[in-house]
Picture 1 (cartoon, rainbow, N blue to C red):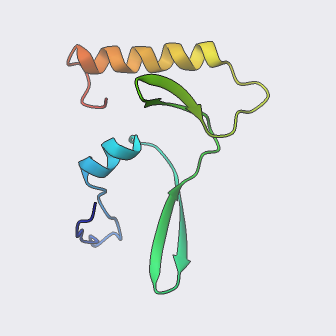
Picture 2 (tube, rainbow, N blue to C red):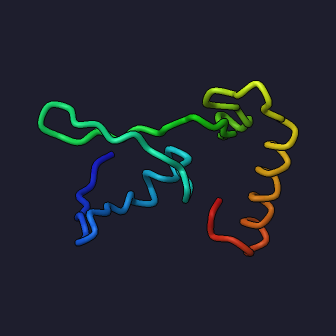
Length: 92
């Protein structure tokens, strides 16, 4: 998958929706920005745990801190999906 984007006057780049959806990127996610060879490389900064759907199952990704509550995270994710399904939110 490839596309061309433009940097705005504030130095921002919009990540196209098809990439955000494919990579399960949501508003507020953080990225590490690195210079590699003659380009810029972005990769998610997974310092917090996230649930992503893989093959129909919710899978925990990232490094879990010792105080991480998986039940709380599942409930938060369920509520977010319910807001999306009910039309209250545009974020899946």
